[in-house]
Length: 83
Image 1 (cartoon, rainbow, N blue to C red):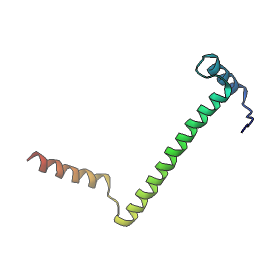
Image 2: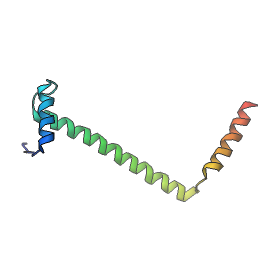
Image 3: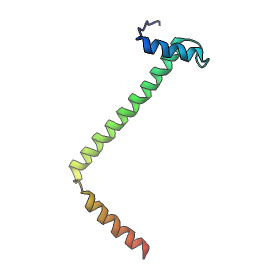
Image 4: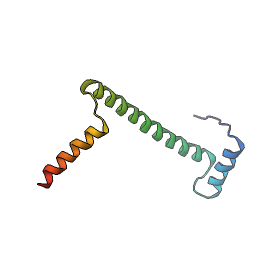
Protein backbone atom coordinates (compact mmCIF):
# COMPACT_ATOMS: atom_id res chain seq x y z
CA UNK A 1 0.00 0.00 0.00
CA UNK A 2 1.31 3.41 -0.90
CA UNK A 3 0.25 6.66 0.72
CA UNK A 4 1.62 10.08 -0.06
CA UNK A 5 2.08 12.47 2.84
CA UNK A 6 2.72 16.20 2.62
CA UNK A 7 4.98 17.56 5.33
CA UNK A 8 5.51 21.18 6.26
CA UNK A 9 9.04 22.42 5.52
CA UNK A 10 10.28 22.03 9.10
CA UNK A 11 9.21 18.38 9.28
CA UNK A 12 10.56 17.71 5.80
CA UNK A 13 13.96 19.05 6.91
CA UNK A 14 13.79 16.97 10.07
CA UNK A 15 13.01 13.76 8.20
CA UNK A 16 15.79 14.40 5.69
CA UNK A 17 18.19 15.05 8.58
CA UNK A 18 17.18 11.70 10.14
CA UNK A 19 17.91 9.93 6.85
CA UNK A 20 21.19 11.79 6.39
CA UNK A 21 22.30 10.71 9.88
CA UNK A 22 22.15 7.12 8.67
CA UNK A 23 19.68 5.97 11.27
CA UNK A 24 16.96 5.59 8.65
CA UNK A 25 17.21 4.47 5.03
CA UNK A 26 14.51 6.80 3.73
CA UNK A 27 11.79 9.24 4.69
CA UNK A 28 9.18 6.46 4.76
CA UNK A 29 11.08 4.73 7.56
CA UNK A 30 11.12 7.98 9.55
CA UNK A 31 7.37 8.41 9.10
CA UNK A 32 6.68 4.76 10.04
CA UNK A 33 8.79 5.16 13.16
CA UNK A 34 6.91 8.33 14.10
CA UNK A 35 3.57 6.63 13.54
CA UNK A 36 4.59 3.68 15.72
CA UNK A 37 5.43 6.13 18.52
CA UNK A 38 2.08 7.85 18.03
CA UNK A 39 0.36 4.47 18.12
CA UNK A 40 2.08 3.61 21.41
CA UNK A 41 1.19 7.01 22.86
CA UNK A 42 -2.45 6.61 21.87
CA UNK A 43 -2.55 3.12 23.41
CA UNK A 44 -1.13 4.52 26.69
CA UNK A 45 -3.68 7.35 26.61
CA UNK A 46 -6.52 4.88 26.05
CA UNK A 47 -5.30 2.69 28.94
CA UNK A 48 -5.06 5.76 31.18
CA UNK A 49 -8.58 6.88 30.26
CA UNK A 50 -9.91 3.37 30.96
CA UNK A 51 -8.17 3.33 34.34
CA UNK A 52 -9.54 6.78 35.12
CA UNK A 53 -13.10 5.72 34.23
CA UNK A 54 -12.72 2.60 36.39
CA UNK A 55 -11.44 4.70 39.30
CA UNK A 56 -14.35 7.12 38.92
CA UNK A 57 -16.82 4.22 38.89
CA UNK A 58 -15.21 2.75 42.01
CA UNK A 59 -15.37 6.15 43.73
CA UNK A 60 -19.07 6.35 42.87
CA UNK A 61 -19.61 2.84 44.34
CA UNK A 62 -17.55 3.04 47.52
CA UNK A 63 -17.06 6.75 48.04
CA UNK A 64 -13.97 8.86 48.34
CA UNK A 65 -11.68 10.08 51.11
CA UNK A 66 -9.95 13.38 51.60
CA UNK A 67 -6.19 13.66 51.64
CA UNK A 68 -6.35 14.32 55.38
CA UNK A 69 -8.37 11.12 55.94
CA UNK A 70 -5.87 9.08 53.95
CA UNK A 71 -2.94 10.66 55.81
CA UNK A 72 -4.56 9.92 59.18
CA UNK A 73 -5.15 6.28 58.20
CA UNK A 74 -1.57 5.97 56.99
CA UNK A 75 -0.29 7.44 60.25
CA UNK A 76 -2.29 4.84 62.22
CA UNK A 77 -0.96 1.99 60.07
CA UNK A 78 2.62 3.21 60.45
CA UNK A 79 2.19 3.62 64.21
CA UNK A 80 0.93 0.01 64.51
CA UNK A 81 3.85 -1.30 62.46
CA UNK A 82 6.38 0.56 64.60
CA UNK A 83 5.11 -1.15 67.77
